[in-house]
Length: 369
Ligand SMILES: NC(=O)C1=CN([C@@H]2O[C@H](COP(=O)(O)OP(=O)(O)OC[C@H]3O[C@@H](n4cnc5c(N)ncnc54)[C@H](O)[C@@H]3O)[C@@H](O)[C@H]2O)C=CC1
Ligand SMILES: CC(C)CCC[C@@H](C)[C@H]1CC[C@H]2[C@@H]3[C@H](O)CC4=CC(=O)CC[C@]4(C)[C@H]3CC[C@]12C
Image (cartoon, rainbow, N blue to C red):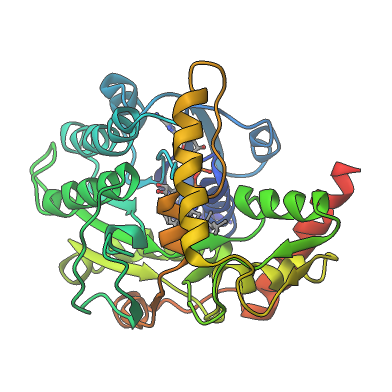
């Protein structure tokens, strides 16, 4: 008992800790990080579920704050040993302005870095995205690539542009002297498309299928592979990287790692059917029901409608030219860099990830009735 009390000495801060990934990181830290003394959860919107965490042995501190406000970030970071920065605006549907996406994702990250430097926090893990690499605007395939695979990473959309800039800031900050004179150690994790309990887009597809009488209509050729990774494994990788960064700073500092697991390589829609199928939905068609040019036309029409309706309401459908290009371009990773550098092995097998996600979709169904 005395040993475990002595071991509990570290203060972690998770920004965006109430988001889809953030909640899993928070819960994973509480389960898997024995050195934790205090866990600070910083988010614009705090979830009611945080209350249940406050009765455990680790001090859980919920902080309602905005990453774009430097003073709020500095106050939350002060005294933390490790910062896991997952907060971000994930918007590829045109719900928010490009300026706001930049402000939150880039300036917010700059604020986190400066707060670490000013207050003496030495370890920073940044949740980047596969999107900092691609798919690029040319729609070139990235087939089972790794962190060293050459690829023309050219973007125009505000979300990948902001993630790429923020990642660059984080990597460049590696080695900066923090208060007290020691160097900052940073690294970036690049998840592919995350799925699992709490995934809003999966929920949207499910409800769309229910509205269409239990059917979804194939829009993307089955041959296009899209990288996916289970949220529990992404969270586990964050916990592990944060821990090992403190012991292997020379090897891991300034590095990027794709987040991967054993989820199968499939098209975006076929992959979703792994969960939606057992929940009663059917994907109609072995080939796309509409030709690509028509989808592109509808996507462009959606952009026009979004613009026309903006003064009246927010029209932000799943289909737009960017999401169509994303879903239509092969982008999958195959790498073992995280295993080699910090011993990462997925905590959840594909079967378990699948079962957990199906159970969650079924619970969504139950709560919708
Ligand atoms: N969902 C996905 O498939 C992927 C997500 N990512 C990255 O993972 C991170 C988490 O994404 P998700 O959990 O999917 O998104 P999410 O939207 O569920 O979570 C983001 C969290 O950040 C918080 N947040 C937003 N603006 C904030 C601000 N100004 N100040 C403080 N908190 C703020 C939100 O309230 C939310 O709780 C993001 O950085 C995203 O770019 C990377 C790859 C794939
Ligand atoms: C109706 C269309 C034909 C199909 C639409 C599917 C899209 C909504 C999704 C296809 C690919 C997704 C993105 C991808 O998984 C990579 C991502 C990484 C991130 O960092 C954030 C989320 C996302 C942009 C993800 C968003 C939904 C898709 C575009």
